[in-house]
Image 1 (tube, rainbow, N blue to C red):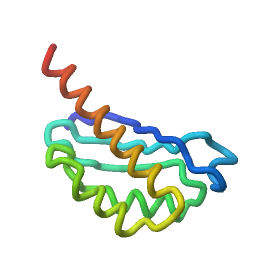
Image 2 (tube, rainbow, N blue to C red):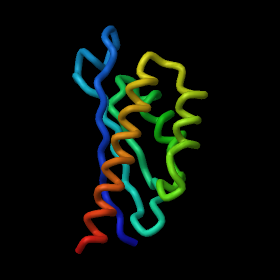
Image 3 (cartoon, rainbow, N blue to C red):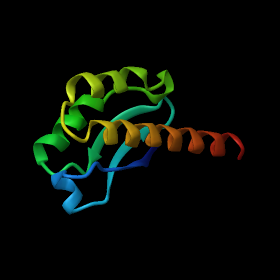
Image 4 (cartoon, one colour):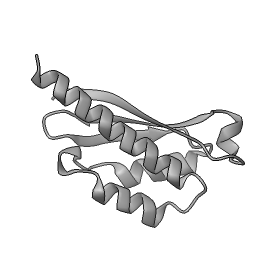
Length: 107
C-alpha cells in the first residue's frame, strides 16, 4: 500500500487559543493513494480533544469521491470558532492531493 502525507493550511480567526501558538491552522493526513482514502488525520487545534474529534470525523473518507460529504460533516458537527479555518484547510489539502495525482499522471 502506497501512502502520502499531505497538508492543508488556513489562517486562524483572531481570539482563538491556538492562535497564540500558530498563525495558521494545519490539517495533515496520511492518504492511501490508490483509492484516496484518509487513513489518519491530525490538525493544529489547541486541545487534544479537538484534534481527536477532527481525526475521528474525517478518517475513512475517499478523496476520490470529492469532499462534499466530509465538508458537510465539518460544518454540521464542529461548532467551534475554527470551523471556517478547518474547512479552508481541508479544501487546501484536497487541492494538494489533486496536484500530487496530476504530477504522478505526468510521470
